[in-house]
Picture (tube, rainbow, N blue to C red):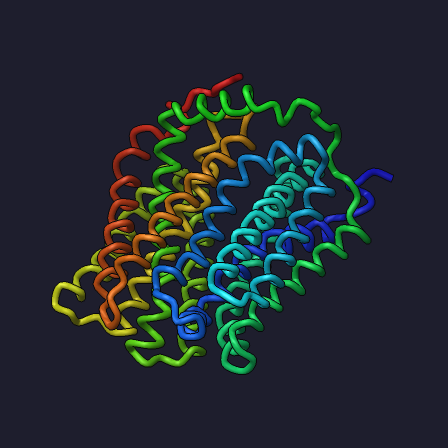
Length: 408
């Protein structure tokens, strides 16, 4: 019996959803716990920010290796390794006696997330032709979107009832559940292994060739600015909402959950607009939404008038636009590379994560207690840049007719 017959679409959806869910679990479940972590370790905001930023950076960097590793050794062993690293990192973080150990544990989790997400995408490509595979991935992403609406509130409730370490124990349980699922039910899906996939010279020469393509740079810059803005807001807003504005942890979780709803609405708009107008026009329309979100984030701060309502409104409009930009960006950056789509996705993912890491680190270093200035100006400028890139570079280089396929 082949792998496709052995698994079936329902099991594939379950595996892909779990392989992808470890990322929002690793960030959103943890957001409401940040102030408590800061107080327990008596650490600065900048140091506590690193527990989020390092996860995103290690996730992005290790994608460059996990993709070829999955081609060399197969999806199943890499998927098991990813879930184990994720669970081990979460367990180590839950027991961390110092913030330095917690930072190292979160870096381990990021490496595990990269492995599971790379393999989840690869398995869909292994098992299904393009149209059916797109349907399976869409179902998995819809399930994930529904989950992400609940994750921030769940994290807030866990932190409030059991302390911040309970969020990490929950992540560890999810990682172990993934290991059990793969070992018991998931066969190898790779049709053939590539013994030369980890030859570093050709691998990095391919990455350099991809980076020179103007379409790849335009689409990647679009998503990098958008992802950095989102990560910067999520990683810093807990202090403002909970400590400065005295919003409860549960209410803060609802704000972040509302952002997931806005993102989901954006993905629905994206599908409708692409069908009617195409990818580049859809991105242009969302560009105006990004510029409007930038105004909502920056203008109130100019008069020191930000409230939880104005910040939430800016966040939700930003995520609405991102729900259109992100899927378009992922498709656009890989389009020029029919023979190297995995490598293009891995390189783009690394750049996204590096941008988020730099933004999160900057905001942690520049944070001033009680002020929304760093958050509103930084995220506002990044969202404005996203809108301008959507209206300029993507319109010039992102159209399918000007994208030339690149071959090795």
